Each structure stands twice: as C-alpha cells, then as structure tokens.
Image: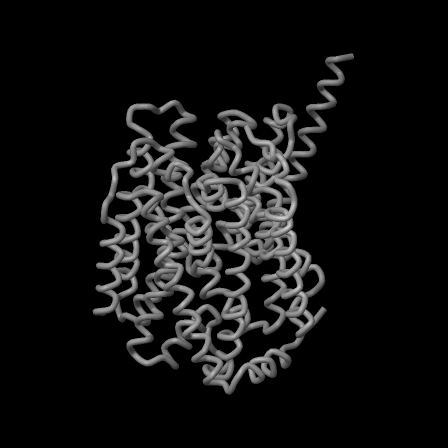
Length: 453
Length: 36
C-alpha cells in the first residue's frame, strides 16, 4: 500500500507540476504538433501496451502455445502497414487530426456525427476494460476492494488528463512505459528461472495440439490486422508528431514493442503451465504468476507497472473521448456556447462516468475490448480508408453513412442476442458494412445513369 | 504452418517490415505524400 501511495503521489507530482493552461484545442489535444521521435514513440507504445495485451495475450499463450502467434502475426502486419501506408498521410492532414474529422472533411457533417458516436462508444468500452483490469490488479496485489480500486485508478487518471491535456498524458506515458517494460521483464525472468530455462518453455510449447482451423486463422488475419488502420490513438499521435517521418517511425516502434511484449507474454504464459497447472482462468495467469513467484516488494513494484499499462491506455482514451465530444460531435452540431477545451474536459469526465457505469454490463476484460474493437472497425473502417485514399469522396456520402450504421448495428445485435463468439462479430460487421456500401453505390450509379439518359 | 515454424515466421516478419520502414524513411528520397 505504501508503494501504491508513493506511485500515485509521484504521478500527481508529474501530472500537476507546471500545468500550463491550454490556449486552444490544438494545444490541449495535440500539444501544438511538436512531438519529437522519443515522445511520439513512447506515448504510442505506452498506449499500445494495455490490459488486453498484458493480461490477455499471456492467457492466450497459456491456452494455445505457439498457436497464439496466429494473433501476433496479423497484429504486426496491421501496425507496420499503418506505419508504411497511413502514418505520413495522417500527419500531413492539417485539417483532420481525429478520425471523425477525416470523415467530416470527406463526407460532411452527417456521416461524421454517426462515425464519432461509434468512436465514442469504442473509447468508453476500452476505458471500461482498462478500469476493470485496474480493479483486479488493486484487488489481487494491493488488497484494495475491487470497486475502490477502479475508483482510485479512474480518479488519478482523470485528474492529470483533464488538468494537463495531451502534454501531461505524454509526460506520464513516458514514465509509465519504462515501468511497464521493467516490470514485465522482471516477471519474465522469474518465470523462466522457476521452470528451469527457455528450453523447458519450448518443450511445453511443443506439447500443444493444433488449435485453430483454416477459417479461424483467416478470420484472425482480418480481425487482427485491418482494424489498426483505423485506430484513433494512432491518428491522434501521428497528427501530433513533428513530421511525417517521426509519425512513421513512432508507429514502427509500436511494432517493435509489440514483438517484445509477445515474447515476454509467450514465456510467462507457458511458464504458467508449470507454475500454476492447467486449471487457472487464462486472463488471471499473469497476476497469479506474479503472486506465486515474486517477493513482496517486487510484487508491489510489478503491480504498479501493470497498473501503469492500464492507466496509460485509459488516459489516452479519456482524452480521445473528450476530443470526440468537443471536436467531432458538438462542433458538427454547431454548439458553440463554451470553448472547445472546456467541452473536451467535460467530455472526458462524462466518458469516465459512463465507462464506470458500463463496467456492470461487461463481465470480462477481453470480451469488452473485443466488442469495442469490432464495433469501431465494422462501422468506421471502410469509410475511413476511402476518405484517406480516394479523391472521389463526394460520391460515397450515402453509402458510407448507411454502411456505417449497418456494420455497427450488426456488431451490437451480435453481442446483445449472443449470436456467437465476439471475436468473429467483426467479420460479419465488416461484411454487412461492405455489402451495404457496395449495393448503395451501385443503386446510386444506376440512378445517375438513368437521369443522364 | 505449426509449432516453432510460426515463431520463425514471426521473427522474419519483424525483420522484413523493419527493412521496409528503414528503406522508406532513411534510404530513399522523401516521396511527396499528399496532404490537405
């Protein structure tokens, strides 16, 4: 508990020290586009390493051995292809630093508002997933009751995000990044040592049978690579980067950190088989390994490191949610009675409150993240890629709007009616969105040709 | 593709993409990327 109090005191010091009132929205949200390579890379990586990656992938390796890499391979493809094809374009878009704004510039206000509402829901669900993880870490390592743990995590993250904006998020992200890496490396070495070396980990990995069918692997390649081309935190960081090259290298650095995390999670997950047996809930493998192997002081330090991973993702999505409300929704609705920075801050507070309430609806971290992910991709992916790559955007307004609604609605219905595994819902959502988009475009063209004749 | 081959493929994938990133950002002339 002392270490936890010290960590919060330290974060408060960094978060609240030398707070300068943001003059305008661009300063609050993008730190005036002055982010260098070091800050861009670390803030991106720190946001990337979230509850799903830290807790979820270790659990996946525990369950499926080498086959878990069927998720890691497409994830890398998604990140690196964003770096190669999209990051520089996003950085150069001076009038489009949120996903909603890129869509507004391409299709107009109506499509932008719908897209922004989906992005807001996506952000709220991701904040909820990370708050849940914060609650579990507080409960298992620091013995703070679950709900109080969530409230503490939320209160501290919200305070420096709202008061300091993006600049403070970046400063705290840099500290949190090093904490996460050091903490997980400690757990990795303790785990490998406990099972008798890397050769033992390899031995365990080779005992797993094949886990996935060809079609499941195909769905992994679609679901775990394409979505990153539309990731709002990538868009925001690339817009804030000083130059296109900084944006591209910053995203590539995320790929590097992701591969390191993959190896670490792989080692911890498989060592978990030897240390804990085969009956542990996959999501709890990492905290259970920490609890079983580490001495008290180290246990608390690593607990703080994982809490950092959770907070650094929650802070980014709080900022994004506030930005979406102020910059994409209310501005599109011509609400101008308060300045944008104040609305963004109020938006972050409202989103935090909604995230806290939504925790009672979701039961599982990975499921919450998957739902968020599928909803966002199914609704926004097709219009966003066309907005970035095509020059004939005005033709696509109606198809994009209806396709977006159809894709998002498919994922919501899939989840609410329990039609199947959440991880597959992104395929159906994307398929519905794509088919509706294409059909409407054909109808539009036919109508145009008829009136021309 | 099964077992350790997956791990080898994953490592090769990392190397492949980093080579492309380095070539595009450092070794060839900055191509003009269309902004607003």
